[in-house]
Image (cartoon, rainbow, N blue to C red; front, top):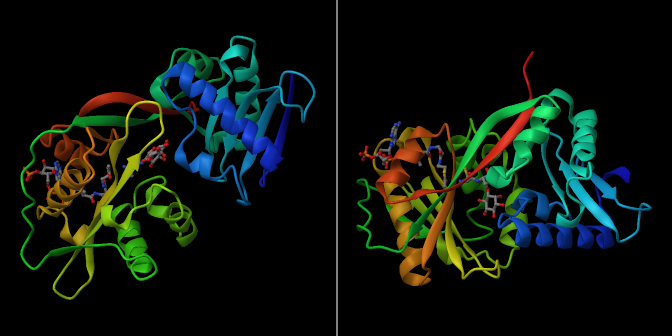
Length: 299
Ligand SMILES: CC(=O)SCCNC(=O)CCNC(=O)[C@H](O)C(C)(C)COP(=O)(O)OP(=O)(O)OC[C@H]1O[C@@H](n2cnc3c(N)ncnc32)[C@H](O)[C@@H]1OP(=O)(O)O
Ligand SMILES: N[C@@H](CS)C(=O)N[C@H]1[C@@H](O[C@@H]2[C@H](O)[C@H](O)[C@@H](O)[C@H](O)[C@H]2O)O[C@H](CO)[C@@H](O)[C@@H]1O
């Protein structure tokens, strides 16, 4: 076993090995081990990112047994190839993450698969965050009821970027990742094949200011048939409690099931987000899976 910590950028040949390793694990586990953010950061230079590579044999060969990603904020993910499990690769990768991330480390366990709790406990980590994965099969939905003076339109790339970033930052000021999105984070996603401005809704007030948004996403080529996602819904704090979030959510889900003909819609929501969870439960979403983050136990 050989491990090496590599600062971004990752050589493209190595990135391809990591992508294949993640695909193999997802096929075996039924859960993707790496998030959209980590996959986007496999390519290109992202200052502060660290890639940890675990080789069964010599470094630099194609015999990649495991991979871990560590961001400058301490968020991390790790995956061991199915054929290399129970051989200590996960423990070794997690030790390197702890060496580099220290007390800031917050490592995801998507789907909280068997072994993740045991591995975390062995190295003194505890669950510090729960992220619920909800699903709603296509079913009739009410028309959106827009608050007075609010109209809805779709996002115009290159024109609405700054306004969206400002409302997103305000709506998610207390969110560990979403509120900190930059123009670069947005641009990464606008360039993705799944991006569709027709599925990105902006609620604007009588002055034309953006009061809220619902950005939808369609997942294709992920094994099962295509499905939609409530990718992110946000309402400006001064507009919250007026029915806008419900109207925006309805607008996007109706678009996914009626305009895009998708059989189901999913979404992710933090366990502590009582307002959003209440809204989605009311609209018929139910829990399909749970992701957790582990962090070093507080002393
Ligand atoms: C998939 C995702 O994007 S998850 C992330 C969702 N976005 C965020 O968390 C960003 C910060 N929060 C927000 O932007 C808003 O609070 C939202 C989007 C969660 C809700 O938007 P709002 O406009 O406030 O919701 P709205 O007024 O439409 O209320 C709809 C329902 O949500 C629930 N709800 C809203 N606020 C609360 C609250 N503070 N406590 C409990 N339930 C609440 C209620 O069930 C409400 O139904 P009601 O009509 O019976 O009151
Ligand atoms: N509802 C959103 C904004 S608050 C949310 O909670 N996003 C999470 C979620 O993101 C998903 C993840 O990146 C998946 O890999 C990707 O396929 C989905 O499209 C994303 O919505 O999980 C992330 C952790 O894995 C988390 O950082 C986001 O905040």
